[in-house]
Every structure is written in structure tokens, then in C-alpha cells.
Length: 500
Ligand code: IMP
Image 1: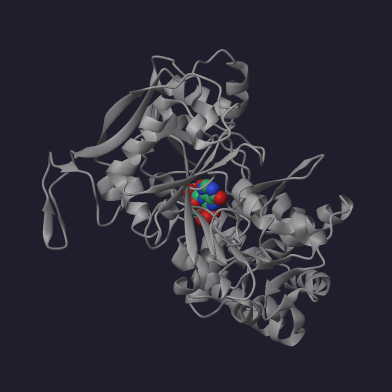
Image 2 (image 1 turned 120 degrees about the vertical axis):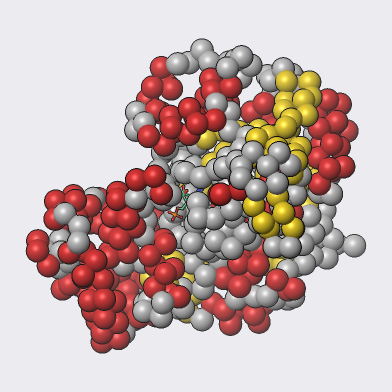
């Protein structure tokens, strides 16, 4: 039998999504699969995502362009699907960068029905966050939420509108006028500062009291439309006619725990990064996906921005350090002697952050670090049809003397009803139907501890070569969640990948 994807039999359409809070190293795994794919599709999110693309001689961080773009020269098709939200400036900047690096993008297509991020969305996102106080989400400030809101609110613009000036102008003015009253409620100087951000073209959209210079926005967007016009197409139709004929790789963004539908609401993004959201946003239904993979870090987790994180090392101290201290990264660089075995978890987390280089690719923020949480993993697996796991970054914990895995929580909040059942104070939780912030915030982790393997994994070429202590942890995860470990990544390079 000839495998369509190495080791995975006849599967033609596969999906790779993150089963945690994002940043699990999808880029590398998509790259590994992209070699055998004909079509690579991104179907959710926007430039809030960030993935690192490595070529032989360099590394680039992209936010919108699918990770398969390195294979454009080999004729592979890359698609930014209907479920994404697109800020044309970011996309055009990325195309320019590809051009400078002499990387081709001849086979890149953009779904004509993907929604368009407008300057007013970015301003709204940032204003809301500035004023939110305790309810701040810690968004990336890229206008993602307000754009999805307009989609659902039936006043959004789509990529195809960039090709039709009259339609664009009419819809754009309508969209903006409905928001003007909101902008008038905010202090003028706050808006002025936001409008001068580089991401908003350094103030070229700013018009003093009227806030937005409509003509400048229309002119810029029409110019972007010209650059993108050959790429904007009926991508849904292309994916539909290709399914079961070509090898299609669906590339997730963010992670299940940030899903608007299944995540730690309201501390989530505004799209659904599960395989269900990814399939829909790529023009398919989930039943057309032959194989799904969920990626987790082995055996830790990270989270960027606000929101509950029961296993966070250093708890609230870490949350505040990562979210409220703009100097955190610089200050951490000075503390080079942190040990991954530090007796204080706050510093242990900091050390793991340094070893794993856990700083946001989009915002540069330090990622909060916590132990692997099986309650959240069990939840994520409910939305992963084939329960196949890919574990990445195992090498980060090579020096750890003790590895802790959270098996269940103790609930110390007020008694709460959950549908027909009841969650009393003091209950032990190993599974949750939903994971809203108001419950997770009152969950304390209970850990099972394992001795660390404390050796370099570089010489491991197969599952059999992995240290027994590491395999014991893998077995424990399988026994307690039902997950199948299929791939283990022990370093950033392609060859540091073990197929099981
Ligand atoms: P938004 O997607 O910019 O609205 O941000 C909502 C939440 O999702 C914030 O907590 C962000 O930090 C988080 N988030 C969005 N994109 C990513 C990502 O690619 N990796 C990790 N966290 C993300």
C-alpha cells in the first residue's frame, strides 16, 4: 500500500489542530505533512496567529499565509479559506517579504468570501481592551473579534468587495457610520494614539474629530485589492472539487481551548479553531476529513493573554508578570541562571519559558507556563474525532527532575448547577461538559508526579529509543484520556520527528 501521507495509509484529507491554547508548534508539523500535500488550507483566525517558517537559510514569522508556502515553487496550492478574517495590509506585507526573499507565491489563493478586517475593527478591539479593566481578554489587538462580530451582525465586508469599488464604498460607509457613535464616547487622545500605531498605517487613516479619513481608507483598500486581485477566488469550490482526489492538508490556528464555542469562554478568540471550525472555514464538512491530529506540548502548556489556567506555574504571580509587565521579557533575559528545577514554581515556569523560547510570535508577550492538564485534554479530545495526538517540544523538559501531570481538579467555588447535574463545593473533577472561566477559576489541580527522563533525546530515532521514564508518562496519558500518540517531536528540525 502506498501512503498518501507517510505512515498514515490512504487518508487524503488531514487536519492538524492545536488541542491546547495555541502555540504548540503546528508550523513544524504542517511543514512535515505539507511535503506530501497538494493543497494546504488555513480556515480560521487571522493575523492574531503567528507561525515560524524555516527555509534552508532563514526563519520567518508569518501570520496569515499558510505554512505550506515554502512549497509554492513545487506547485503546491496554498489557500486562505472562507473562515478566516483578513487584514490586507498584513497580507500584502507578507507577500512583499516573500518577494524580497525570492520565495514564490504563484499558487496562493484567497477565498472571496473571507471577511475583511477594516481599520475601525482594529480601533474598536484596542479601545475595548483599554477600557476593560478586570474584564480584559488580552487580545492581540488585531481587530479579530470586531470583524467576526460584524460577520454575524450582517454588516461585514468580504474580500470580494475589494474588487468592486462601488460595493466596497457603500458597505464600508454603512459599516463605519454604525460605529461612529461608539467612537465619540472615547477620549479623543486615546483614539488618536491608537490611530497612529504602525499597524494602522501610522496615522494615515486619522481625521481628527471625524476619527476616520474615509477617503484615505478607500484609496488604500482599493490599492490592496489591486495587489490581491489575482488571488481572490472561489476557494470553496476548488477545495470541494479536489476533496478525495488531491491530498489536502488543513492547517489549524490558535487552539481548541481558545475556541469561541468550546473554550474557556469568555477568554477565547472569536473563531472556532476545532476541526469543525477548520473544516467549515476551508469549504468542507468534518466528515470529509479522513484523519485529524491534535497537537499538545509534551508535557507542559502555555497560554497568552488573560483567562483561567489551573496548572499555571506560579499562579497569579505568573499571570500578572506575563500580562501586566511590558518589561517582563527584557527582565527575564537578565535572569539567565534560572533552573527548570527551581523550587519555586514561578521561577521554574520562567526557566521553562526561556528554554522553550515561549514568547508570543505575534505580540512578543511572555507565554504563561503550566503543567499538562488532563482535565482540559479530555475536554479537547471530545472535539477531535480520531483522538490522535502529536506531542511537541519534548526536549524542553529534558533536564526536569520531576514532571507533574494534572489528573483532576478540586473545585472550591460556590455550588453551581451544570445542566441536570450539580457541582458542589469540594467536588473532584476529572471531566467537564463545558469549561467556562467562572468554573475553571475555582479549580485547583491535583498532580501525579513522575521522575523526569533527564537525558538528551537527540539520539532517539524511533519510539523504541525513547527513555522508559518518558514512555511511562505517555502510557499514563493514554490510559487516562484515551488519546493515541502518533507523532513525537523532539526538536525544531524535520528529522527530529518520531512517527509511532
Ligand atoms: P484575539 O484572537 O486577538 O481576539 O485574542 C483573544 C485571545 O486569544 C487572547 O487571549 C489572545 O492572547 C489569544 N490568542 C489569539 N491568537 C493566539 C495565538 O495564535 N496563540 C495563542 N493565543 C492566541
